[in-house]
Length: 403
Image (cartoon, rainbow, N blue to C red; front, side, top):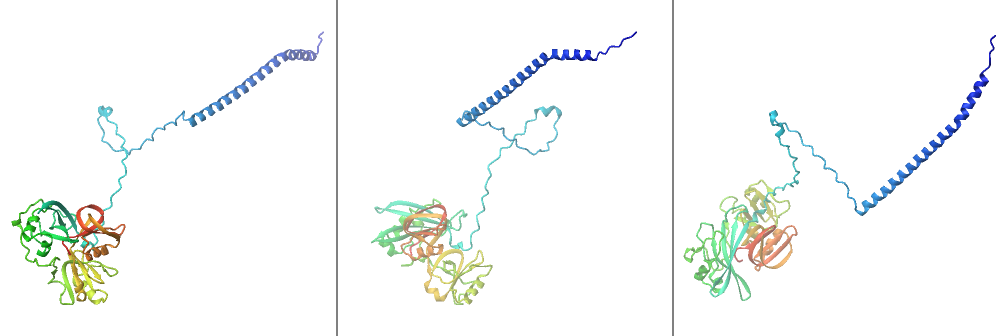
């Protein structure tokens, strides 16, 4: 006979016994996990503290200059690829590396010089060659001026030599010799016999003194080499103008003089460009405010003027003045130099326009030269001139012969 037993209770009892026996093991595992978690937390805290200490140390080091900022490698320069013909395979290994070009400093372009203004007909270029000699028991300073047509001219066209002496408190200009060209025969003496006598010279001794003049072409002359000036007259110290016989009609109520320029007194809105000399004269004749004109033959420019008094040499100029001002015309001995400063004895300085500076010097017998600085509108008058030097900021003038 088979008997069935219910084992469910027995199985529950056995499971309970097994779970109870596993409690110590589970407790041990839990304690181990707790220790691991504490150790990990401590490690994280220690790591954070170390990082903080290191950061503080680095900051102090940077502030105290114990560390320098790392140098970054230069940024490579991109070089445009250039098509190079293929080389044989066996030479590719020997091909040199194309060097990176070094950037050059940027060159600032120099602007071209502005063209000369047509009114700069009164500006010439003059160089001096000075020399001091013993003559008749006294020292004489000989001043030789050389006039160039422009600054680019390789040779001067006229030259002169003079000296200065003070007699009875009066500063006299003693003209010794003129050279009308590098190849022409020099002319001496130039000053009148009366002027020479005042400084203790005769015609013969003036020629002898003139043999000591220094010239830029280094030529020397004996007294017998000098020609006599047929136009030399007593008291004739001023150069004589050449009156035109062609061009504008001299009988039309105008004084017409070639090779001279009337300084200053320009009417507003001058010059009138692109006209003939006849048209320039006609325009002045119709305008009652116009008393004279200077016509620039090189630039075909007409300068109508409200007055005319001082005339200066100008190769490219034609001066026409109404006869009402003819008696006021004075032919000045001034010659001009651009970008040149003259040295000597200054006696007056003030602010003037360039034409007024010229007029001031031309009208004063004591003035032998001037310097004009356009930037400051400054005019300096000199009672004597001894030498010149290059100065791009200065326009100057001297009297080649006494007024």
